[in-house]
Structures are given as structure tokens and as C-alpha cells.
Image (cartoon, rainbow, N blue to C red):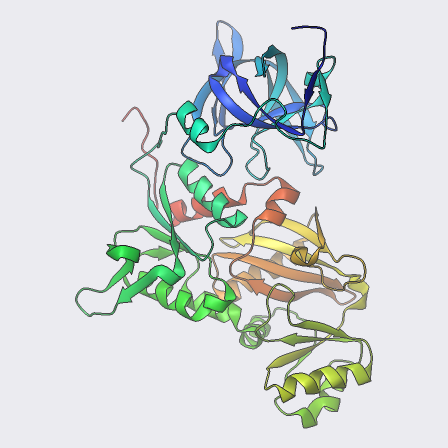
Length: 462
């Protein structure tokens, strides 16, 4: 290598020849000290009185089929702090890195980077004396097309005896859906996306069926993961019920999804199960507006459309006059609304607890952007990792149980009266919580299906 430093962009393609990785996209990050590589199934072993490690690399983001089995000598094991503040013990290996026409040895830690945008991070220790970063540009050393990547990697499906899983949703390109498909493939299953609108069913006592576009029959699936957007609740739940009738396991059944989508009924159900919520009022006639406002403790108060989602159809009325105007305006449109007390001490923050099989597997705190009262990431809010209290975890689990949901996003607000439940989401998004916590939530969802179906992976030796 010459004495001239290489100029690279904020992302580049590199190869790791000793690991037989022909191409992997890296995030060039001088803010990170250590380089890291996405690796799973990490297993240490002894060879010639030295510690080695075997691991699987899935080098292409959102692709669980292209993978490589790798081995490397362990040179260290150290505690590494991630960008989200999490600390974990990682194996460290040393291997040649090739970038452009240049190559040198780098130290790399092995970790599961599933929630991250890049399969590899190139830290400053690997760049010192060799690289100058131009953060405004990308792929200064050349981009690689998808066709070229496919040629570089032999397509492998690790375990064809895996489960047949269908992902029932509307948009295959959403982060959550891509992650679930990737996790299913990586865990050895055959997982396929099915657009809700393109599914149709045959109601028949003897031969009931579900068909997909072109007439493909879906009756032989082992499991379905319903990810139904609110506008498709009626038809999506009808399809889910049909899968249930065919004895196909559904990770969240139709009844539970329907309950969670009916805001008024879900709040009544939660109260019946001892779950505390902010004081809430519901009325049909505009003549009851004044008493409705008094019922929830006066203004400021929150007005919610029953059909609203992701913070839409939610209004903060700071004065009695404003509350009357908004309530009466909605009533004149025959819109169903809830009126709810405003928890001022929450300061625009709430908790999202992700519950799988009656266990809180991750929790984040969401904070509203300046000038906004709704702590919603879709509205420009921020997410950060936080530890839920035992009381908050119990509340989240009780709420998911009340709805009958296997998987739920439970939103909780901290008040002077203790934790209060805001909402239960039957199709919670993964991006915010995976990014903030570094946890592989998608794989936990797939493992929940494995557990429910008592599926055991067949070893390669048998």
C-alpha cells in the first residue's frame, strides 16, 4: 500500500478474503472506535490449544438466505458499548480487510447487528493512517449492483425442513416486514409475504380454502403472522379467521386484533381486567359536551377519534372554549370520539413496552418533538432505551393478556397516580424499538411460533 491515504465515502463496499466474504457494505464511522461485523450462532471452540470462534454471517441486509459459515482465531474478548449505550461482551478477531485495491489487517468484534442499517461498521482504529472520510459522498471506490451481489454469493437456504410461515400484510418494503422475513429465513424457515388485498377465500363446509393471486392455495402453511394496517382491519381479520379455521397457527388471532382496534371496547375490557387508564369520557350527543369536559377533570384535555392511528386524529384542547369547539365539530361530522384527561406531568413522554408471550422483551421511552404533545416517532419524536419498573411490566403484560395478544406494543404513560395505560397495538412497529435497544425482536417473534408449534430444528448430522 502506498503512503497516500485513501479517500472514502460514508459507506463503501469491502471484502474480507480470509473469511470468504466477497462483498459487504460498511458504514464508515470515525465516531466509533471499534469495527464490528454482523454475526450470529457465535460458538467458541478449541483448536491446537487456541480459542477459535465459528459464526454465521448474513452479509446482505434484509436477506436471510445469503449466508456464510466462518471461523477465525480469537485474539481478545472485551466489553463494547454500542451507540445506544448497551454494553456487551464480544469476541474480537483479526482479519485482512480489502477496500478498493488496498488491503490491511483490522480488528473486528462479532455481534448481532440485525437492527442496524449496515452489516459491518468500520471504526476509526481500522482507519488510522490509511483513510480519509468524505462524509458527503458514498461509494467513492465503486458501487455494486444487486445483480453483481447475487453473482458473488451462492444462494443458500439453510434448512428446508423449516416451517412454512406466511406474513400477512400490505407493504413488503416496510422495515418491520423485511426484518420479520429476514429473521424467519435466518432461523431456517420458509417465510413468504402475502399482500392482504390479493388474498381471497373459499367458504365451504368440506373444502374451505384461502387463495393468493393467480390461484395459489395457502392451506398448507404452518403459521401466519398478521400485520394488519387499521384501514384493512375488517378484511384482514376475516382472512385471519379463515386461517384459524384451517388450523393454521396465527401469531395474534382475529378476535384479539379486533379487540385492540376498537378503542372504546378495548378500554372497557382493560378496566375489567384491573388495568388503570387516564380518566376517559364518551358521549354521542353534543348537548353533553360541558358535562363530558367536567367528567375528565376539565381542561387541558385530549380528544381522540376512535378510528385514529399513529397519533392521527388526536387533539390537545388547552381551554374550555377550544375543547367545546373541537368536540362539537367532530360531533357535527358524526365522528366517534373519546375525551381523556391530560397527564401534564408526563412532559410529552410515554413508554412502549414490547410484549411477546406474556413477557416484556424490550422497552423504550418516546419523547415528543418541540411544540408537540404526542410522543410518537412517526411525528418526529425520539426513542431511547429505558428500564421499565416491575409495576409497568406487570401493567403491560396484563394489558396484552386482556386483549388476548401473543405480540403487542403496549403504550404506558407515567403519572402522579402511577403508570397508566394509553393503548395496546396488535401490529407494533420494530424499527424504533430495535434501533434503540439493539434487540433482535423479529427473531423473538419467529421463536414464539417455533415454541407454540413445538418445532425443533433438525441437526445437520441427522
